[in-house]
Image (cartoon, rainbow, N blue to C red; front, top):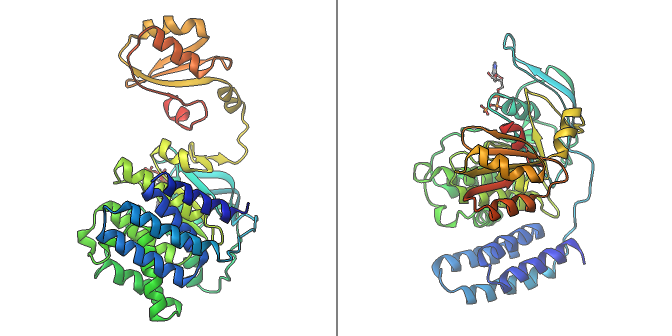
Length: 385
Ligand SMILES: Nc1ncnc2c1ncn2[C@@H]1O[C@H](COP(=O)(O)OP(=O)(O)OP(=O)(O)O)[C@@H](O)[C@H]1O
């Protein structure tokens, strides 16, 4: 089964299980991959219909399945270049008299992948993004880009390599008109412009907001607008600085899932690097997490400390049991260290201890746990240690 066939089948299963919202998003991803304006028009009509008939799921699903059948008839060529779009080798960045130094950093970035950039405040996330975005020049090391589209002008560069900073600028007029303005620079017909813009509006869940002004949108929708504006230009490398700031937990999950599937496009994949303080959410969607510590990171981090930490089972626990009690009940399952960091306990066990044994011990001793998580492989372990 080809990747497209598999994706179409997934969409079918979502609808079969009445996961309408998710199914529709995935259907739109498949539609985008066709690059076919007739399919786009059908999605636009369907979104309009859904907006006018919000409670008629069964009819909506049958309409979606008809579009799905038509997408299945279209030949979609999959992108298959595995060359990294950017390769950084021992890059560093210093700012004049400031003591902070970013790097050396070595990393390769590939299309179709999501990279989560995490680290404590002031550890160089924004600096790294700005260096990769060619907004500021690195001090030493080499940085090699491999864009598919020819880069002859700064406009070409800024289409393929897009950086969205933490604070975005105010715009005037309606959301839809602003998006149409973006495409008006790309030499396409007014009709095609309208269809492509409306398709992107549908995909990013902006249908009911398309006629609103900047001041009428919440932070979450302003971020969605920025993404729509960027994605219309079909970037190859997308750098987002804290896109989750100001979003509620649900909106964070939705936007991350959306970003992941948009980057995973079959014929137009994007390499995405996003910085965030939302560790769990970012780790869940990232193909790789870049953790910056004092400005440093290397792809193959095989330092001795790393190897030792990787062997332990590390569990974060929130409960109102005393430290002494936890110490006592965990000792038989090879507790090596118990740390209380003011809010939660971090328990370090021997590598042979299993997470289910920890759950077992807590349950059998009737400990009231409000939160527990195995963070052995999460970058969270660096933040709590
Ligand atoms: N333009 C600049 N001139 C001088 N120093 C700077 C400049 N920009 C950043 N720095 C310094 O570089 C260091 C790293 O900052 P950076 O903004 O890259 O970190 P960050 O990880 O993104 O932080 P945060 O999570 O707080 O956004 C800080 O010490 C900061 O003071």
